[in-house]
Length: 353
Image 1 (spheres, rainbow, N blue to C red):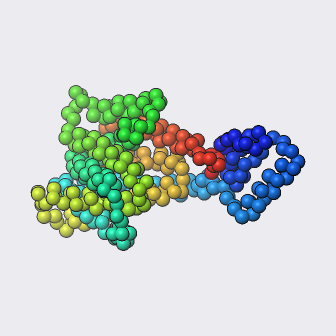
Image 2 (cartoon, rainbow, N blue to C red):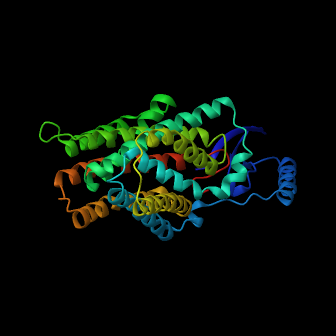
Image 3 (cartoon, rainbow, N blue to C red):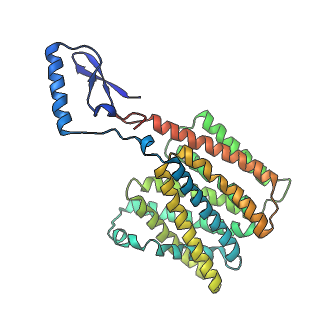
């Protein structure tokens, strides 16, 4: 809906709308002389400044966005699969170091812009804090992928957006409405259904995966702040550099000489992860989150099938039930956020802009 402001123009209320070139449109009759003056002024401004309405709906390509998100999901499942295959004989810190080390090769085109940066001390502190959190999360993630079934790794990983929501409320002061709180409680119950403490043993891999989602959630919050200070591509570059440097001493403390197959496997992991992030970015550019988000939940189906066929992992119906609860909570929070963002339009911009 167009935003409305009161303007001191013969005591009338005017509408400000992108559809009208950001110019005030009188809603009531004006004196003939004043009306002609206003009309002439508008014509002069329209002749020199044209602000066409921007429509995300018109530019939206839902099918293309879904296909890119489909490719992104397959890539991230590929990360899990190749780590499970080639990371069994390597310490988690070493596997993670190799993955990020190879990943730096994909960022070489950003090197000139990266080297020209001069971040402030505050920004550098946030960069390194994010790198530390992400490094811990990656180590735990790589360990979990070799310790528990792919189905459970994927299901618990859906918790990350819930941590982001909680962190935004705690650190950014974002208000948690009752419906959001209810969604978070549903997600927590979903985790309990997956883990079933007291019914079965909660393994170190499960705890590692819970740590991963918390660390990644905090990392995303830092990324949100840093993206306001620098180009998002450079935010990714800084994360890759800091995580690699922080993982290096941990990897060399317990270094195991990798085979050529293991090196190749970690290179493939780096490629899958890089392409997965690229495809996700493309998906978000082409279609609204309400279209692309449901596609990400296919990862659980693929992980379950691959785990059963390739690794002989029995599908657990309780994991499916718990994951469905988490997915429902995440979907609700995500879609509601998308609706709120469409509703909170700036002055002169309509919801269709």
